[in-house]
Length: 227
Ligand code: ADP
Ligand code: MG
Image 1 (cartoon, protein in one colour):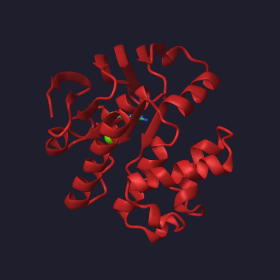
Image 2: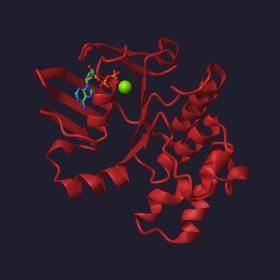
Image 3: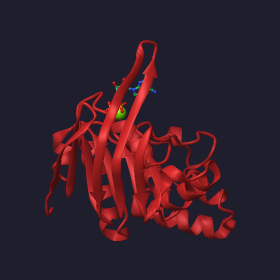
């Protein structure tokens, strides 16, 4: 379960303080597929980054598995993020000098997991995203959609309770976008991982169980449906 309470955040620029998120309250149940929808500049990435512990809010609580990550020390937060949170970037963020398998394994290297265990787990996830035969290639040898599938596998390797994705299909054509969304849906069903997916496309949001709509930093709608 992911809960946000009275969350507010501002950015400071040359002229002063600009409010970006105002009094956000939301609850996301375990295993849900959630879209965070809104036009450009509405605060989607800021809210996602705050919930993923990538930055600290001015005010409010962010509860993941019952713990308020806002109150964590830097070290505690880093450790919590490693074991509970996954992140998928719009531009994949794969390391070009590592193979596909090594990229997927990387989060486990930092957790001190043995090489044989890491390898087995990475290959299993690569199979789930349909790329096991590409395991020994390098990122530059894959298409954009394939690279995003690798980054999805990487985000799952630590078995996080929640995965945040910031416009994961933003750089892909419509057909590839549909493929990626279908893979995320399948993984959500198979692994019961919660996904929070930022999008500015209503067609993507419509496929999710919960749609949170942001407008100018305010949560204006929380729609829940059975998909
Ligand atoms: P979205 O992801 O919905 O496009 P963002 O969360 O990136 O929106 O940005 C929301 C608002 O906050 C925008 O007006 C943006 O210019 C501003 N903003 C985002 N990041 C920063 C920053 N680091 N410093 C100053 N302003 C920022
Ligand atoms: Mg954004």
